[in-house]
Length: 201
Image (cartoon, rainbow, N blue to C red; front, top):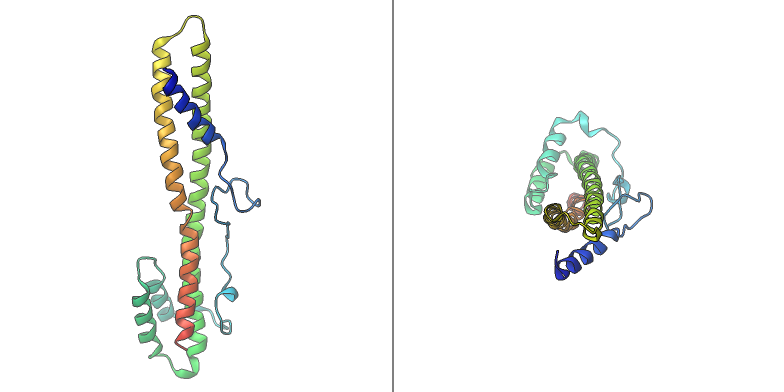
């Protein structure tokens, strides 16, 4: 391995050795700068009275919630869907039914967030394992390079493996930055839907 290539790989390894800064120490394995929030509380988002009934007992509320909760549904469509539904709800029941609707939406968004958070955890553990594998390759390469009788075939094999795994690690680290935004975006969507529904009462 020539000096320039080794210097570049050495710099990359040094960068990889630095852990990603977490926003909280509650979970030292959490890789995101964004703070980990496992549960979204309805009382922090919903500006009106909490629902007294269970949305699961109303199939229509469940249907509307399932229609507006997914991220692929834009907010204009959410607004139209909610407005049309509210017109079918007796005025005396609207505040309670609206609260139940948001409760249903929040539960559905929460399920999505939990899956995303679990996926981030698996992703981070895979990155940690890959980092260990890269370190092992680098240590073996350094030892072989320092030997009096050099195994050139093995050295070349290790150089190729190290370059490849380093590339994979860096690409995955870049992807993780985008994945880490997903829980926050889902939280923001929940807030936006809460404001939209409450604003129609």
